[in-house]
Length: 446
Image (tube, rainbow, N blue to C red; front, side):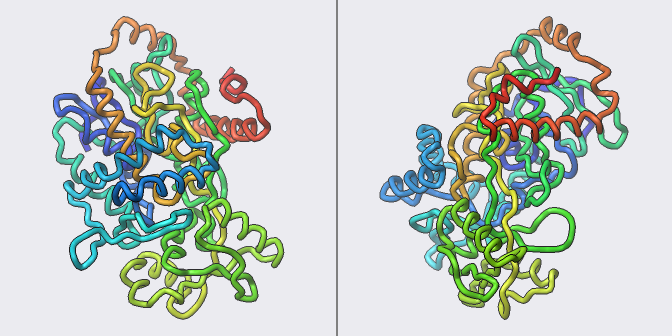
């Protein structure tokens, strides 16, 4: 890790695929700082199992578009959906050029898998650890860039702003607890989801929505904050901590869901929210804490080749997927709402961008279609980097000084208390949204 300077051209908060791809696509002459709360790989991008969608050709466009819209209950932004789908081949090409190894057929073409809500196989994958493969490859590429500084265990406590313009962030060194200002002409929030603010989740516990609370406090628009996707199948465990996801690809390849009597009770390839509701209903009917997932209908050689991480984790929990069913339960998984952003990643505050799971550009609607997350994060992060480069202009240092003058030093003296306040702020805003209240106006910090 390199020493953090006082000033950079661009500050990126988050080391998932969105933050990393943004850094990769910024001009090499611009100084860039990328920070994360803990270790570089402690991001949900790294955990993604299933894969990443790719438009197979023009013949596939209409069905891919309809699948995404239908899964999102037609609350999606059609322009965002079109942009994502049309840009998918470009993104997959970028990844291949960087060295990402996707599964291939014997003739060298991409091997596609199918997941819930998809009318056809169109998902590129690397075993059952696609996120790990992509994130690791992006991270290795970013580490080679002399203009980019990567910094672990740095927490963003606030943004520095004046008159709706962002000039950087207030940050804390997690080890020393030192609080300091970092200035940047542009700031990009790529801070991930909010599952860590709740109990039963597949997310890392550090992902509690700090950036959303900060944006709400500063009047930056946040949309659909109550649109939180619950994944139908996480591995049931009595142990505390993050839940292990059982990829939707497992059901796409033929696994079935069974009730307590080992009878099939639903169509496993419906969109996630439909399957989740069916699982909860069956658990209630059976009076159980989980349902069963049977992978034995998938050929053993395919299980071993496509799902090695799932096989290993289930083994660690005492289950042999080749011989028995495994217990699964729904868990909070993905955030479709977030900081309002356009198709270039711009928020409602000047010089402040938001990309990846932490933003809401409307591409997912009310329910995300499986394996659109990595694609959406990569594509719009690249678009944000291109937008910053195209319109780059240094910030006004006089206004920056005014922004610093408005900071309340007392606010940052107890960082843990402040972060806990942010978490409660997010939970309160989610509740407000579910009650139909305008959380953007009513939940600013007093």
